[in-house]
Amino acid sequence: MSCKFYLYSGKGKNLKEGHPWVYTDEIDGYDGEYTNGDIVEVYSAKEEFLGKGYINDASKMTIRIMTRDINEEINIDFFRKRFREAWSYRQDVIDTSSCRFIFGEADFLPGLTIDKYEDYYVIQISTLGMDRYRELIVKLLVEEYGAKGVYERSDIGTRELEGLEQRKGFLTEPFDTNVIITENGVKYLVDLAEGQKTGFFLDQKENRKAIHKICKDKTVLDCFTHTGSFALNAGIAGAKSVLGVDVSQHAVDWATKNAELNNLQDTVKFEKHNAFDVLPLWAREGREFDVVILDPPAFTKSRDTIMGAKRGYKEINLRGIKMVKKGGYLITCSCSHYMKEDLLRQTIAAAAKDAKRQLRQVEFRTQSSDHPILWGSDESYYLKFFIFQVI
Image (cartoon, rainbow, N blue to C red; front, side, top):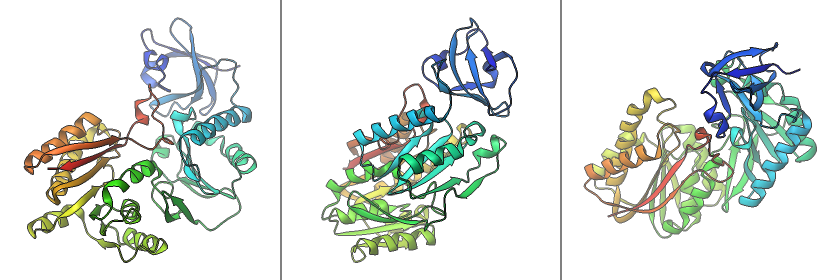
């Protein structure tokens, strides 16, 4: 018999609208016994069933909803169904050779991320409740989705908020974690074990494709290049020359390997620089590019640091805009959920004003469709991506 949790009167509105979390301060009481990680049922103050999911009373997000069907059991058949629905959706909307297979709450599997890199899968489990299903998840990937190997990258600080240790390592027999994938005609060597996140930023796949049309025969500067993905897409699209910069020597070395992998080493070059330092210097020297790409890391991961992040985004966009030739293009984005779309627009506009340049919007995009935005779950929307002509 599931333990039943009851919400305070007036609480549960977001839950009814599709949000998957129940917060500590919404819970009035409960009936029964539970252990953290158990599946429990959630009811309104009027005893209306709202959903069931796993509990962890050590977390502010105390209950994470798995299903709205009171009769649905959370077992291997449940996971099989969720995986099948997620895979069917991705087959409809995106190239699945390498893609995000499971995107947590947006695929109704809170706390679980699965990325597919050709025939290898990387999983990330962020919550205590989902941690219980690790073996079941691996079994399905191997038996039903042809996984040649599964690697875990649960080396994330948020696990500690759930009372969990960080985890990393093979969940199948060991394999070479340097995997070559192909995306938009570009080959990448992806380091599943040591690369950022799960090895590669799959969420920019469609945005990388979107820059092809404006990079042909252009000079391109790619800031915060990481593994060189935007730079290489510019190169494959026929750019005249591409320079990628990153503060990390490891990133520069890896990106250079990727250029060689695509036979683009004569066109696409990489250098170690801090973009915040080098862009003002180059601007004073009069250097300009036809296309400037800004894909910085998230400057904020909480509400408390938004104002500092706003200053960071304004500064880098101001510097980037000044580097664009008249009539050229600025590609700029933010991967922070807390840097809301309106605030980012205001920040870029302020940067353009200070640079005494006018922007003409070519395109606005979000994360690739294998990272779907679930309405009712605002946290699933995080990536904002602009292409502007700079006048």
